[in-house]
Image (cartoon, rainbow, N blue to C red):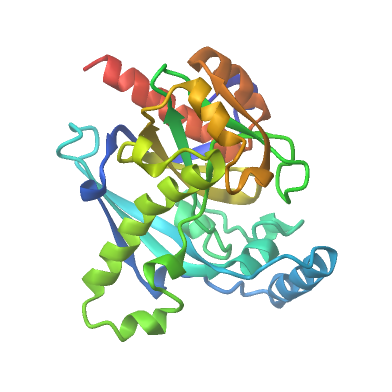
Length: 296
C-alpha cells in the first residue's frame, strides 16, 4: 500500500499477469446475496436513508447491481496461462448500497472477521469496475470527477462504473431459474464484466471501442471507507494522448468529470493521494502488473 494512504484500501485479489475473458468465470447465485442484519435498527435505516437521499436528489434511480461475494483462484502465482479466477456474484441494488455501504453508520453492518465475504455479509457491496488505460505513447488516462457527483467530488479516478445485470439479461434470480442452463447465465455475466469496462471507457473518455485492446483483469480492490469493492482491468489504447484529449470533449458521459489527464507512471503515483481508496488499490494492482511483467 502507498505510504501516504496505508489504510485506504485492501487488495482482495491480485492477478499481476492480467487475465483474459477465457480465464475469468463467474458463479452467479443467490447464495452470494446480502444477508439481512439481525438487528432491526440498521435494517430499518436503509429505507430511511434512501427516502432522504431521493428527496435531496430526485434523479436517483434504484438499479440492480452485481454483488461481490468472494472468489476462488486456481493456479495462484503461476504463469498467466495457468491462472484462472471464478468470481462469486449475487444480486443487490443501488438503494441497498446507499442504505448500507453509504450509511453514515456503515460500520454497524460489518461483522468482525478476517474473511472478507463474512465481514461484509450485511452490506450491499455492489461490484464496481475501473480501467487503467494506457495510450500508444505510454501515458495513463485519469479523470477528475465533477463537483456535482455524489461520491468523491473533485477526486481523481480511473474511468469506470459498474457491470450491469440488465445488460446480461438479468432482472432477478427468478428470471435465471427459468433458464435451464445456469452455465449460460454464468457465461453471460462474465462476458458483461469485460463488455461493461469497454463501454465505460468509450462513454467517459470518448474513444472508439475499436481503438481499445481486449481488457485484462488485474484484480479487485476494496476501499476501507464504506467497504466498496471494484474490479480493475488493464486496457491498451491504440491512440495517442493528444488524439484522446480531442475525443474527450465530445464524450457521452463527459458531464461526470471536469478534466482528462494523460500522465506518466510517476505523475500518476503522485495523484493517488487524491483518489478514492478503491482507485488507489487499482493503481497498486497496475503497479504490480508492470513490475511482474518487467521480471519475466
